Image 1 (cartoon, one colour):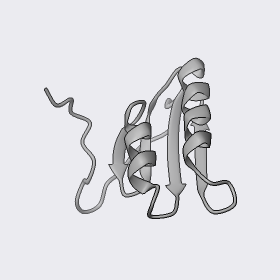
Image 2 (cartoon, rainbow, N blue to C red; image 1 turned 135 degrees about the horizontal axis):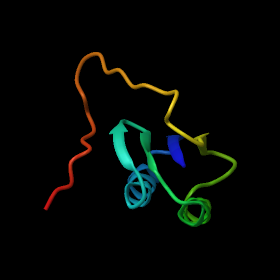
Image 3 (cartoon, rainbow, N blue to C red; image 1 turned 60 degrees about the vertical axis):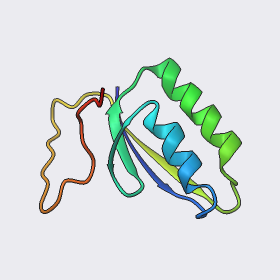
Length: 87
């Protein structure tokens, strides 16, 4: 499945949340990640994020697109995230 993840967390936890999310998804821009992920890895990511965030202060939103067949992506301006793998 294809996931778009958007987060708004306290500045103290931003680095930890981003680092954890980048283990599973591609960073697109500030507080936004996307990518293909299995059901198992999605559940794992959610559990790991629940240990990092504070539910009374922070927010993480998952947009679940079962298929990207009917979706498109357009960027205007600077592309902040990169889909390339760094070796």
